[in-house]
Image (cartoon, rainbow, N blue to C red; front, side, top):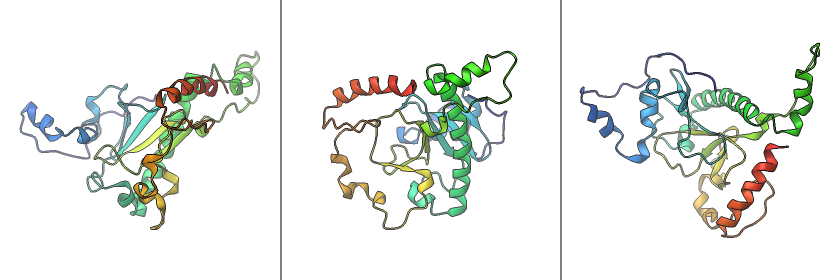
Length: 234
């Protein structure tokens, strides 16, 4: 992934006492854990923080749900603790987030190509062309890795700070996921109230072939391992 920016001015300045326990106390609630990345992104290695600027921090999800799972964290203090449905009612803020998501999505796509390009059949012609001597005038397009990236939020966020998921499609599917490009949502959009739709009672299904596993999670898990291998070789 791309290296981090160097020492930008933090967008958030918490109260500091000089006591090392102050920072720990500030984010003592596990659901507030994303706050430390927003506050001090420069203190984390590039294996954790992908990049940061005055407005956003991009990190690797500590508990990934797919083979590549990133989070985009807005640094606007007025939006920290807003639910995505409320935060994205601010159209100017929404467009800012969507533009940054596009940048991170492109970065994630390049990372997928780096990881899986050597396995992908759609990349074979491109790889062969790159090895030709003399070089070809134009390389074949290869696999569209951006199509293998999904971006959005969860209708029931697991963390208090606003965050947007940028992740590869080989994931455990969730009915709470709402694509970022679907915002702003209409007021009567049923995804605003997923609990009312009985989503929590839905069966486990494969993200790729839609096979229904009922409540048999372990069977689904084994199946997903096979689907993952097939997916990366497309």
